[in-house]
Image (tube, rainbow, N blue to C red):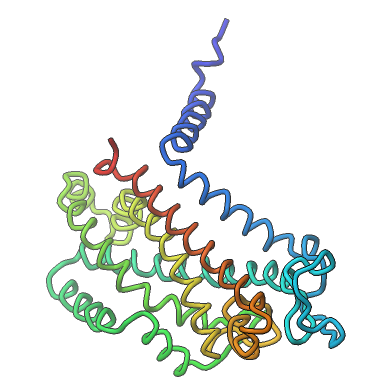
Length: 298
């Protein structure tokens, strides 16, 4: 009679379950931040069913209403429900933040791994280009890209805005991935792959990339927070998401700042939402680093 506990699939499921339990026990802040991220994602995905009002519906009669049972977080100067706009704004923040972070981290990882693998002049040329990009602060470089590319809305999302946020992420991720890839390049199995006649693309993508997943995932979670914060800053400056699209940064700008003394709930709740999102992704990134990096394990 066969013991099903010895089957590979059962063993792998038990190992994953035990790893998840250990993560929850050893990283309580990571678990809390993951719960906050999950709530944000569920709110954004099911915003059509969760939001009590249409975020674009205006009513001058309901303008500047304080928090009450009918409007839990109050209304803005146009009579729009702030809670509904926050829920739909979570969708905007997550779509732009995740897309920008994934694009920037992926391109940066490919650039860093390629630079470390080839070395020599190719490495020197790529690193000088990276140094030029690193000399600009994130917000300044994003402003330059947005001003140069203009706007390209598609399904309510500005594709050029995603690209503008992703470009400043590329050099920072590239530098970190290059440092890890330099160590992997000296491994015997990389030399064996070269001797076997494998192409450079196969060696980089199939032999080096899997060993770079830990730092890649750590930076991906961390840069989602930066992307959300950068999108909010650009929207606040009028270069990001435009009206009437619900966006947290957009809710802080414009007429919202003019009613700070008479209707503070207009900017307090979007500020809290941005802070929670940034803290959650940063704490989850730290927890992922402590969990995946052997140097940080006790």
